[in-house]
Image 1 (cartoon, one colour):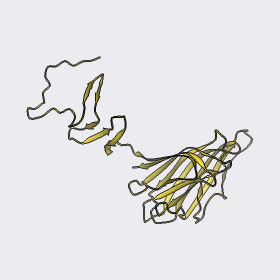
Image 2: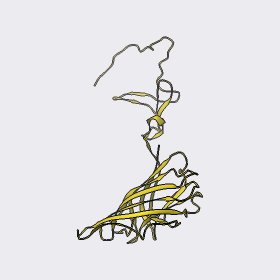
Image 3: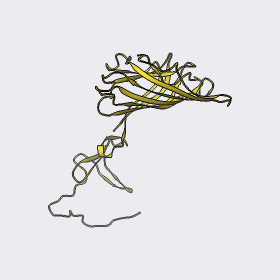
Image 4: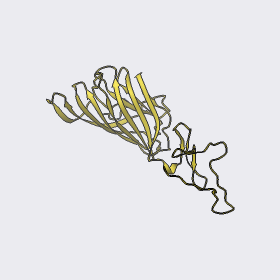
Length: 241
């Protein structure tokens, strides 16, 4: 263990003060660590602040990564998972991460829609395109094909993100959806999604969907749900700087 022995610590200039912490803070120096809740630079700008339990309550924007976690929805036996706040002009891109989405009834689909009225209605006109790759566990069938039954053409229906998911105890789906510039009042709102699921084959399914909300009003809420019944899982919403 290294030690520094000194009788006096003085400022570089007589007119400067040496300050450890601020009023109300406890500073501990020892055990190979410096323990503080707020770290500032020489100019007094806060770099980050901790709540004292390992959670950062604020981080200087210059230190943040490009991807910012905004909301986490974890649900069980839910009819829908809705995001009704946080979708605004702060970010140009919103990313949704689906983690172990499990439907409680066999042969069900994960679907989604947007809203222009804060979630009162999910019925924005969409035009979409869909194709699917799959391979069954028996290694007896595989395909890659356009799915004419799951695309939309100027429809207000919910759009498929998966198809015929199994509800076996170990079955689920996971993936990512990207929504671009939802607050634009000039352009339509583009999006695309890639989902991997265990289908009723049973087998591996990869579902590729893309499209646009054909509306120049801002999309300010979105809804994810099974086509019927309930489902479990976690969906995280991120903003991309």
